[in-house]
Length: 73
Image 1: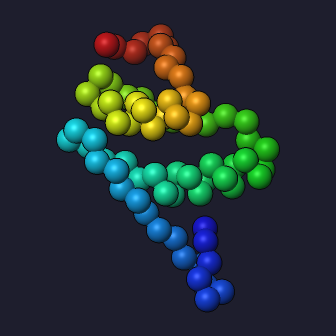
Image 2: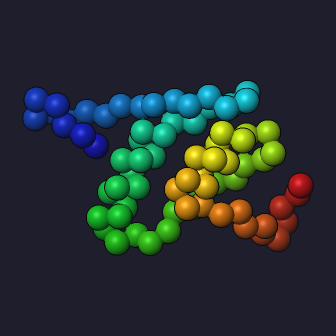
């Protein structure tokens, strides 16, 4: 969480992709906090072929697609 005039504050950047949207600024701040705590990986959640922008965002963070048992295409 950020601070402004010594008071806690936060912001959200919402990115639209297809019929969905995701918040990335809070995710970025969370990733920075996790890095400081020594967290070595983050599950970025699922995506499908209709969310190319979200796929690019996750790939840009170093994300990679994993197919798990029980997933349906």
